[in-house]
Length: 297
Image (tube, one colour):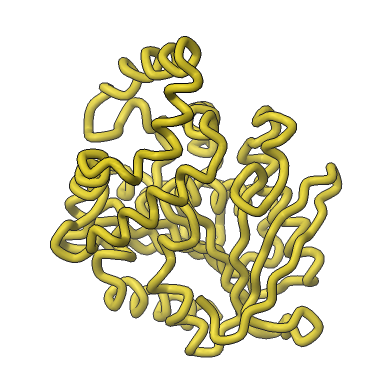
C-alpha cells in the first residue's frame, strides 16, 4: 500500500505483539508533522482503506497502519479472546504511538474503528489533533443494525449454533468467501454495488477467514457494552463525522448523534454512499479528509 514500507512488531506491557507498518523509517519520524493512524472495523482489515492509504502516502503524510490484538499478524488470540477489549486495544495503540514519541496525531476509524478512536480520544487526548469517524455507532449495533433490532433477536441463536456445531461453524467461517451467495449478500448489504467490484468483496471475505472464528461475537458484545456515549461531551478534539446516506448497516441518524454530542465536530454525508463510503466514493472522501487535516494541522 505504501511507496516505501517499514514493518515492525511492538510488544505491549502485557506481552501482546502488535504488528504495524509505516511509510517512514522510525528513526526519521518528524513529530512536528501530522501522523495519520488508520483503524479498521469489525472483522475487517486495512484493505478497507485501500484508496485512502496510497492517497495520503503520495501526499507525503506520515502513516501508521496496525493490526489490533487477536487480529491477523498481531498476537493474543492463542490465549483466548477475553482480553480483546476496546480499552486494551486503545492502550495497545497508545503504547505503540508512545514508542514513536508521536505528536500531531490524527486517528481515522471506520465502523468499529470509530469505537477505538473515541476510546482513544477519551483516554489519551494530549497529542490528538483530530479524529475522522466513518460509519460508526455509539448505540449498541444489535439495537440499530438494518434499522431494526433483528440482530438482538437472532444473536443468541447464532451463538447457540456455534456452541452446538463448532466444527461446522469454523468451516463456514473460513470458507464463506468461496460461497457466491454469501459474497452477494455481503456486497449488497454493505457496499454500493455499482461502485465496488465483486473482487473487493472476495478479498475482504477471504481475510475474514484468517481471524479467530469467535472474534465476531466477542467484539459484537464489546460494541454492545461500550459506554462511550456517556463520554462524548467530554471529547473536545476536532472530529469529522462521515457516513453514506444509503448505509443499510448503520442508519444515518447515528452519525447525527455523534455530530450533536461531539462539541467540535463536522458532519459529511455522502450521497449514494453505503456502509463503506470510502470505498464507494474514494475521491470525495479523500478530499474531505484532506481538508479536515489541513484545517487542524
